Length: 355
Image 1 (cartoon, rainbow, N blue to C red):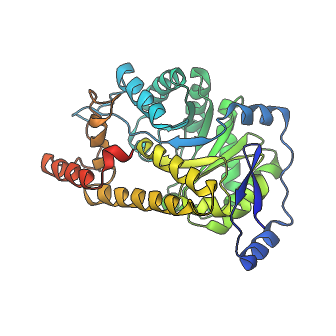
Image 2: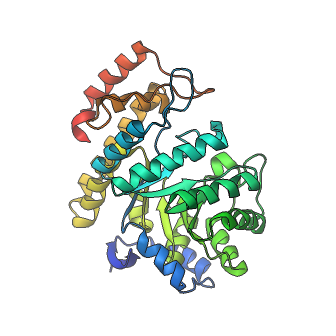
């Protein structure tokens, strides 16, 4: 038999799990329960896209590294993201080098994205995370004032904070700045060293009454934790899966959506998902789409990763006349020769036509 997992209000067919794995994991969540959503939580969930295909855009800079978040620039980026099939934008994220931005720059960038994103039908999550609660709360209040749809935060990331209750308390203080907005947790333990279980985070938030914690951007390879999240919170929280391969979430539980980071892979993800769930024979096509995405990622990695990805927007319809500029230090831009070789390598895998 196939396991039915609730996805955004409907049941989607999932392939069978290994029996022993299912027994162990289900035993883990047997004592956990997600409370029914309150009226405000239900309102927040209904306002979110039915399928959250999340993009964390690169921040545009000028040659002197100053912020270049003009109305024309951000509107072009928003239009291109929507054209690719993105429904949700997280700004500024790791790819957007949030840690290099001043508070004033983050406010300017978020305001631009709220305006442009809503014009193009995008759900905007303002990432307000920083090590300072006061600064994060100020950013949260600004996000609410300019009309962001949600806020998000990393845990404190200087040092290793592994006390779940302390992290929840930290998030609760930030949330006070935007009481009318849902809150997402940025779970990226490989970078923050907050090696907690996201499952424990939601349980702690529920226990202390942090009702605005409504979702997680899950950037962790702990598949057991992800399975437990989906088994317990899939109908009451927005669970967004980031790790590669994306196929892993199809078997364990797809959550409410995916974290692509790069908007130009949205079509690849949608084809992968459609193929996987259409029939048993079509899962081969999903595997091929996943393999191609990993191959494309390897090409970018060979030529500078994010610095290389910034350069391809000059070839997309809505951003062809825009220059994202260099990344901020300590990241470095790729050279013209590297860009030439990058584009040659992308041509060899039919990158432009496969999007």
